[in-house]
Length: 228
Image 1 (cartoon, rainbow, N blue to C red):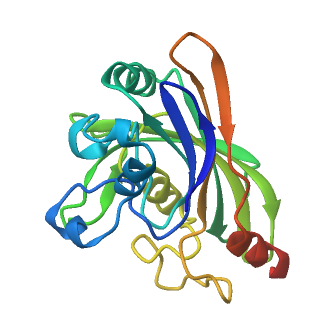
Image 2 (cartoon, one colour):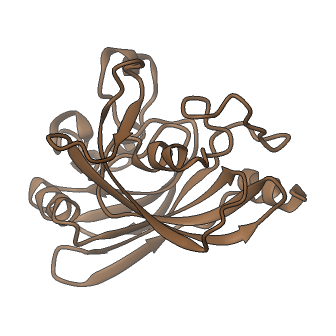
């Protein structure tokens, strides 16, 4: 069962395992078990909050692990989602990317839309108006021979934003099958994209600021320990 990080009368924070979608969004998702359905068994009050979302405040990709927030009622859902939309909350991710970055930190600012060549992907554009703006900050935690470990803070919330932006930067995420480069070398034994939702800093209903955190899972920690 998914680890419950925090629970109140309005909010549930969970540590999502990889391989589970947050909620069903399309017909292709109908065959997948979702985190929202699993949680609704333990917390029946979230059933139907936000419709199919069952209270999910936001989403992360299926193979991304880490912190996800759920609201127990419509008022809390609106309050929490409002902070994300107004960029008043802060999400932090840990990721391992292909190749060593020269910069110690930086910011990627582009416009973003669905890729015309592959509808599964997003595409970043520079200097093209009329599309959705996307901004991602990153800093290097550690460099390895063929990879870099980064902390990433997405300042906007576009689909696949971190994956798309890092690939656009020339450093796709290790294990990412969708945004990878042809010459990309992934660490031996890595079975998913190396992307983990480390924390969310947000104000909960009632006005208290909270930071919900989840440690790097064992499968990703193991990969780091073997890197040269």
